Image (cartoon, rainbow, N blue to C red):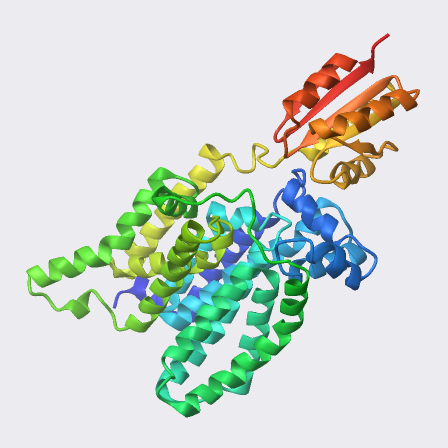
Length: 495
């Protein structure tokens, strides 16, 4: 063993590399955290948690949403004790997105060795998919984090179950708490917990004592989730989402590209690394070389990761085709850790010394940084809907157009009111309107007000053509400004 390999085997050296990875990952997640406007879905998270007490958050926020209440309850406390600006609202995602890097290292080390842990942590720290959702006021980064934590403890329980031994109290408690957190954050978290339970059940069917141990773990999870399940069922909470369309086979290949900075080049490179073990195995068989030379003994971990990646991915795809469309890339963030751990494992299969393997990983990450900063321009260019900039136009126009009314079209007028207040404007949205059926209500406002100017804002959703033709016929257009996912029209009354 040479000196470079000796260094890599040194725990201090490993933790130094992990420290650099964490520093980069945390820096990326907190850099520019408040630089962009909250977009539609983030404003929805704010609005559904912006109530006076927890019971109202659940009744008027969570039960009217398509997600469990976990993230809404978390945001309620953030808004109550920290604040409601972009930084504070996105802070939980940045924190959990950072913690996910550390826990993925621990999971990789538990499944395989420190090398897989470091490589997967480096991927999670630097790639677009986990970074984006670590800077978004939504549940996905926290869902990913608790999926990793629950999987870390589940692996220990799974191994002991296969050996016929009982999980310790600390392991069982850690799994119950992390599994409940994932399940209360998102239904895909509940889905993942259910799959883990089925896997434990499959290895315990012929052994009654093992079944009792599983009941001791999953019984508390079922009991703790039952209040929400009953409340959601009684309120008619369950159901599909209209904007999600049935996927095709292309979506499966696109998901692989999305995992790697939405880059065709990185997707192809990752694909080649994924299949490299098969190529090496075929080569070894042809040359009658010992297979163990290329495949170190850790098959169980690889099988678990393949199941973790493929079962949710393919089952979600099939459910979306035959029953209810639920296939979205962000829902599938639960399989991102498995994808990166598998890629890390495949890197270690490459027939090179550890130092060379890490150099190849560094090159892959460097390509990712180039794609992130140059091709995607992640930090240089805005990519979220610009509700804030649209509202700022109204705030800036107060002196020039003092007698004005604001009409807006978004899922709720609270979205623009949030930014009108933050931007220091005393204006508020007088009416939400954008459909043909809203024309009569706009007529009443025009007839009953002395205002000479009218702002019309829209965000995320488009007003109907007939409605816009009506506005242009009744009012005189002064200016129109376009933003990402938003527009601002300024009209004046016709003389």
